[in-house]
Image 1 (cartoon, one colour):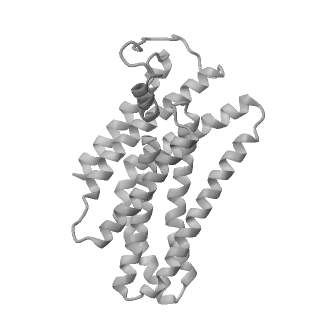
Image 2 (cartoon, rainbow, N blue to C red):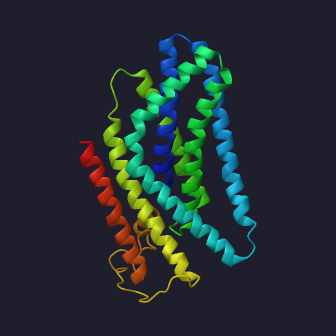
Image 3 (cartoon, rainbow, N blue to C red):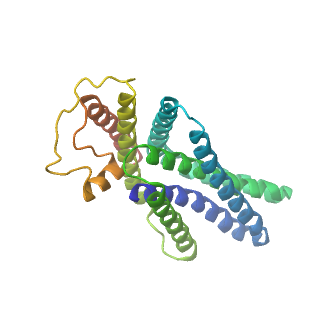
Length: 272
């Protein structure tokens, strides 16, 4: 549940923060009467995102052949892993440039009287993050890490509500919320989640004999922390924890995590 909460909280914060900046900038320009068009774009973005989630589920269920269904799930896991890692490392560098770009687009739409342009601006801001959320949520469900539809939806809903409340508080309050540290450390957590998804994809590839097992079990620490226990299940859902991994699965997880942690640390070191 925490993994789905973290993803929707971060994605929701990014989307609604951008929408909040649009609304604040419109207030500054004295055109608050156009706010309803921004709200319309947000609602349309949320509706289309929910539609994408439904389509994802229907498409996967149409695969009656279990082998091809596994391949599709593996593709979702690998694609989500790459997008998560990209988002965690590089997207924070584009934040200011993205905001400036949105402000310029908004000024153009207002000056030209293009109301649908404002709707589209808010729509794209929400839809982009909504699509990423659908992708990551699907990957978590198919990863075998204990994320079910029920607890995933609960975590996702709480994360979405929390992001809306935080953005509202930022826009209404006088004190600035330290967003930079938040994005820095949630990026770190997201990289760890991505490593777990990658490990799960390798495990599924081994299950259908695409990737060899080589060594079936390099260690077993179930007596310390069982991945079927209460806390072990939480660690498995959040970080892809496996008490008895195969050699290739563990090596893939360690290499992936080490590589992207290096990128993450270099990115923030250069920014500092």
